[in-house]
Length: 442
Image 1 (cartoon, one colour):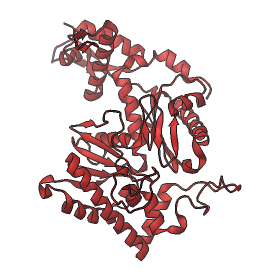
Image 2 (image 1 turned 180 degrees about the vertical axis):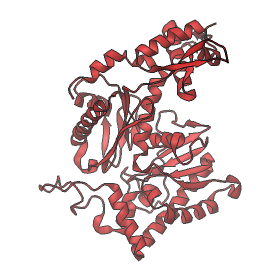
Image 3 (image 1 turned 90 degrees about the horizontal axis):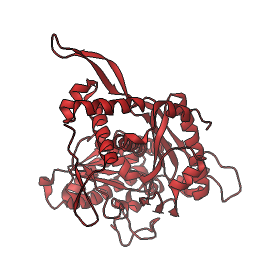
Image 4 (image 1 turned 120 degrees about the vertical axis):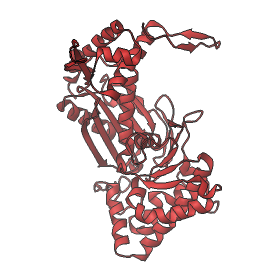
């Protein structure tokens, strides 16, 4: 017996059965996810585990084989004298997932195939803050085209691209507001499609902190923790919030802008235009400004692009380089650096206590530069959090340092592409068609 159709809701609230195409898409996804979780197994095993009729599974498997999403991997025998069964497994080695992030001072890339094999991973220093949206989109397009070429040479063509941005992003891929980039109403998804010259690749855009939270939840130090907050330690500070094992997006998809919690009415002006936001206390720009003021963001020190000065600029330093400079100051016992880091730790704990009081997470995972300086940041942050959380020790919330580095958002973006394909395998053409597409010039 085939899987029973799950009802959907029509505009008038009445239950409606899934149509044939929707049901087939759901069944293909069910089979594909089963193979992803269980590894190789026979068609009969899939039918027994999913509740689908064996003839239905055989029909679905033929389509998945044609699309190149599964492969036959030999035979297995049911019992001592049972008939041999031909086993199948998830393949998708020719189907890529491309995750990207454009942030204030870098572009990050994480490309995999459908089985999770990493095909390309890199981070390029780039002054998006100083270059403006047009130059930034041109550079993002150039990097994307180069990476697609690298993935093709590794045997896979992207089945989708997701780009992370530090700002508010709507469902159409428009960056409504990215304060630290000074982007307003930028149709990033459409612009990147134009930069790719009509290549048939779906492009979507999401908030970088949400993508980082997905990566932390699936493969980070607190993977599987059903209630957690992930903080990006960048020039700006964003938060991805996992509640009950699901990403909290809010009514309009704009949740998680924790960097703009007002914590100091008499403080500095933030990139968003308001005064005293949390990221003016704990964002990387704030730490650099306090610890190494001669290298502060926005100064013409040779670290920026020099677009406003008429000279050819040096390459923008990777944020890792700036973190290493801070770490050297700590190792050398520099009083200015030590005091700046301790102050960030205290403010990190204060903001963390607000999040703990609101969401009662078990863990607050700190990424980016926070993770690199965790040994010095977590003790004052944890002490402040425990002092200010209303539930006290009963809350049992602790800070943990991410092990995903500055690439968490791009990693989460790639995993989102994989999830899209798993949810709708019909989005991938047949294997011969996919290989023909992969042969196009980039």
